[in-house]
Image 1: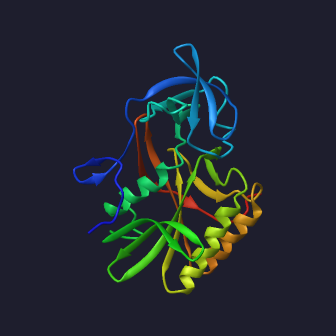
Image 2: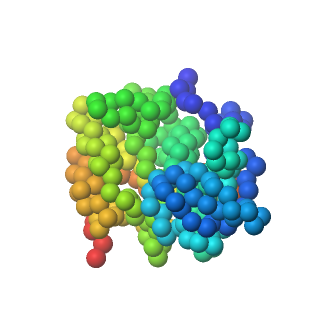
Length: 247
């Protein structure tokens, strides 16, 4: 039996699907949660589903894609889901990475972990809440998923802003390993075409150092990219990753 919340089901497998997508032109971001876009020439407020800085993505004039809100009474009628950076479509939905990792696990598409028999979301462990708990045979473990959207010259980095919460999760994963569990940090690169993944040492040295300590303690660090389309997101293939500080 699988323990998993469902977004959308195709042939019994959960999919990260968006409905009734609308194209727009980005104008400006007013705070972490709100931005203005032009829809058919009309300036419209939208909800931004990513609280990161995303300055390299949300440039005035960029093509963006929006999903209508299900609640007709919501203040913003659309959520900003993805944006073109040059010729590359980047998914910005911070809730999507957990979903596509869960889908891939159910289909056995993350060979480092295997095909799971039990999968639970948002599981409390110690003072943290990890994204996923899994069982494969007699193996048990936790997975913390991080969506990454910052890319320069084919290199993806995380985070794009300091994250004390992210560091706290890493330290809890170290404790999980010491308690006999498997533990993974899986960076989901929400675009195609990246060549490698590195921690963003310049942006958050404390997080990056904690990531190195975690790997040395037995926490496994993985990076996967995604197939991105206007109305869907799917985990794709493993990307080379290194925790070294790039010069």
